[in-house]
Length: 309
Ligand code: PPS
Image 1 (cartoon, rainbow, N blue to C red):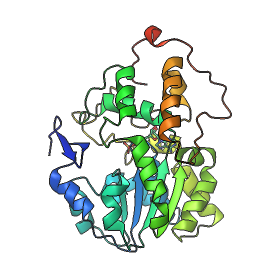
Image 2 (tube, rainbow, N blue to C red):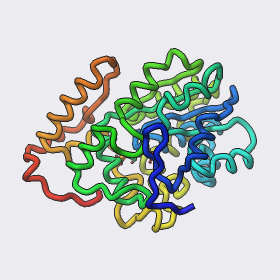
Image 3 (spheres, rainbow, N blue to C red):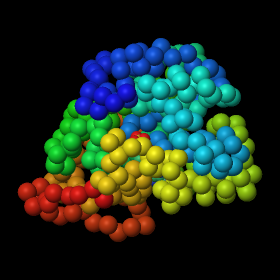
């Protein structure tokens, strides 16, 4: 399956045709969940791979072997991606699944299920920046052009997987309809990885001792994951992900958006955020409290064209 230039539109949302077809998307929407399933749900670039690593490590009692020997997509496949049925047919034991689908596409499939759903969210300015750089390296995503154009599309939801705002609000406002639901943010994991591992282990009912927790914490640190070929996507051929254009494990920080957003862009984003999130009580951490990074004070017109970090 190459289809690098193909875009699939399903229920008004676009998806990369390299990984999705109408059939694979229908398979996801009609998926038969089992009560023992764990489903990781994210909008892209929100901490998906990190949570896949955390859930793997927690399920393995902190033992890093599986995380170091099996690619993330084989141990926690995306429901909507074409290889999912093959991976599930070949696997045994409780399933870890991943999805970027919005809530309304999975609400029927999840109805009545006791599957454990972990929703990971990240502040949308960092998501936009991470997604922008990912578009530069992922050959199955369109060339993003200047950041200002990409940001406009991101705000309008005119990017693959749709609107960040609809995704986050759709899942979190329906949390009460999901039997087992855990909400975690990228910033929670960043600020307190140990505590986040404990929360996930409690939620999954996989209690870990201090040594197991410490082992899991080491394995899912940014530095460890950055060099683990099972999660850093260096196994993917360069025709599909061009690592000369950037790294999948790029910076792994809170607040990197200040290095690319102009003051005008930030101000305008804040206005859109205030209006689109007016009916939502979620609060995000936008900057690393330990860093004193200051917002780029240049105006849009003065911004240089930036290269992948
Ligand atoms: S994807 O393509 O949707 O699966 O991407 P996703 O995994 O959701 O997001 C990738 C970003 O998560 C960062 N990341 C981490 N940050 C800190 N610590 C750890 N362990 C970690 N693992 C992944 C990764 O670097 C991407 O963020 P940016 O800002 O681009 O660096």
